[in-house]
Image (tube, rainbow, N blue to C red; front, side, top):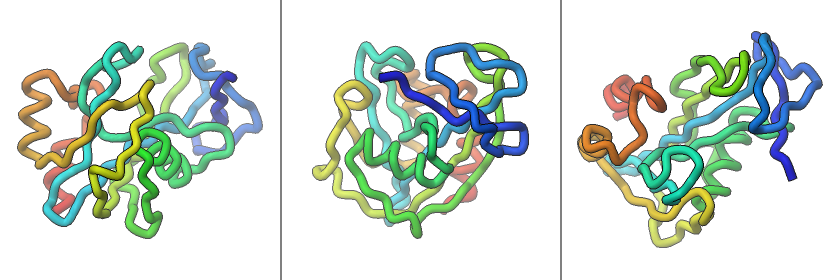
Length: 173
């Protein structure tokens, strides 16, 4: 079954139209993408490894994220994506929006709104349940470790995926 997104307007309001994932977006159409950064009490971030052979970013390390589906708001998309990819139930009271920005959509003439969520929550790595078509491994990583992984080319690149990362690492202590 095709994944459907709510089409939003430039003010983030739902238009009442739906868009099928993978199809080019039209000019003036927007959709929502969320990134979820989870930090533990040691100041480490929960990162996961994408499944080798995945369509995008095959085998690279990442933070959890994805597209809001029809009916989602930003928080529900963040909670759903985390549970789908890692089997983790986040406490919504532990989260806050860190950053919102927009970029041209990768297909067509539309635009993607990005909401970057920051959660402070302890997660037992052994309790993670991977979604095999999405993720295969997870670990807690310090800011320095993530930067090293980016420099080594094994973490999704900051310029393409996480243009805000230096600010996140500096401000979220």
